Image (cartoon, rainbow, N blue to C red; front, side):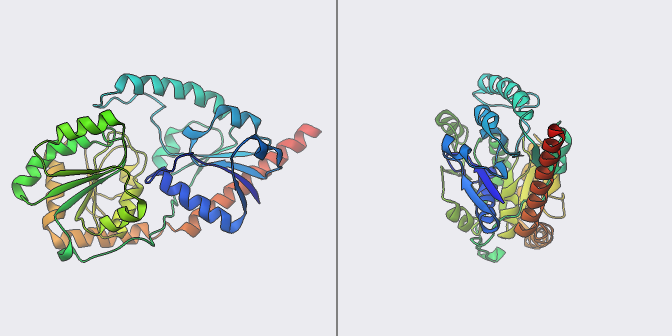
Length: 338
């Protein structure tokens, strides 16, 4: 197939950016692929256009496409306003309203929306939505180490610190330190300058290190130093970093937001904690830091679970979606000519 791929201009190191990188590489192995650069690309007769993230799809571009359009959706924040503690909540509220309007017009131009997880599939209202839970990831750069060689290090990986629950985690840290005095927290991710400054203020007096924009290869190596990954989000569709951490031998501790319970089975492949339950969050982190047998069991079961979601299966499903969308477009075009 001839595929026009519409990507975010600035690469993201985690989440949707991880998926986008794998998608681009694997599509190029199977099809003739061109990344959209400008209007001149629209003159080519493409079989299908694929935007890797709905929120980065310009409405003007969607209107100009002459081929079927497939889009991945990685968030649900626009559906209704979800309040959580952050400095820029008025701006987020207005942005949510803007996206609702933008997506209302975009949906009429989209031939298929790919949704990763049952929670996302159920919450989206679009006549042509496809479930593709097979978010195959590349674990080639992952480095594994025995539990005994790891530090009492807790990892928080991801941008948008306040949406991902960093203030809640910082409230739990004194409880963790009371039982594991040598515990440390490493925050890896990007955010706005004011969010970074306020996060540093909230973490004063705590053993917390911030790293902004660590290269993906270094993130993979850093997993091997840690004994716990934590993502206590207020809003989250799916946690791809929990899969990476698990494959690197790090049990994940997630909140119960959105589709998180789909990627971690509480007490079996990691822990799910009700959002805002500081005491339980601290207890689960302490368990990961101190209980070798439990941690290794969580990782073992987690690897069995995530091992089913291969890149090959993900790409087979995407090809299946392409064929269905193209067939529908051809059928509609034939009907219009009658």
